[in-house]
Length: 268
Image 1 (cartoon, helix red, strand yellow):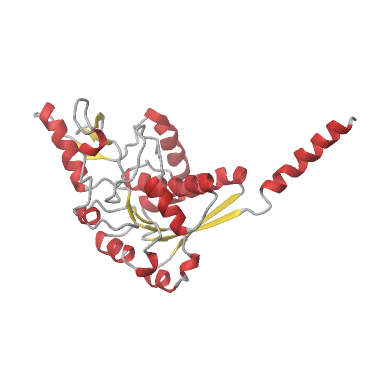
Image 2: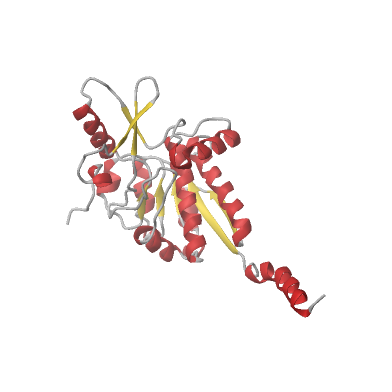
């Protein structure tokens, strides 16, 4: 065997060991129930993050804790907090002084007040009430006689690799993905993508990247980014009474694109 081939085999053998000599371990903290769709979505995101992490030298875990346990944790041990509770508790958690530079994800509340609060660390994944209202108004302006509801996700959504995500979720959890499950999955997906791209796990660095550099597909086509209100820009699916997707908002021809849906800026 030539020296060149021997060298190639040696490099092939030791290269993965060099790359993963210092694997990145990421612990995320979750506050909320563990018997619903939000938690199922978080678990789906965790499973996929670790699958990707096998090739990138990254390991992820999600710890379910209480607000009291979170308050007792050293700040250095907190990378991101996922919250699947009501608006009141989400706001209380996001306002904790120790979390001022930590990404806090709202996974469950559509309350406009969480967006109006304009907290720099609060990232809202679900559609806000105002986004739903605006999407419905766009539909009614063109279809006044047909009633629909507004959703972030639907189990029959197939575009942009959505069908594959729906299939993976249903296979793993024996139920269909809905808005709550998508929000849980999306938050973990964003975080794992951020670690993969930046190779950083410092909370402040991650928050800065998520707010300023994130370009998230989310299997919904349009690139999703966060507004200064902390709301995730995203398309809205309009569903008729027979549970069929009839349109995606913003509707064609509506000015403003994604920013025609919901509160866009913070009041100065």
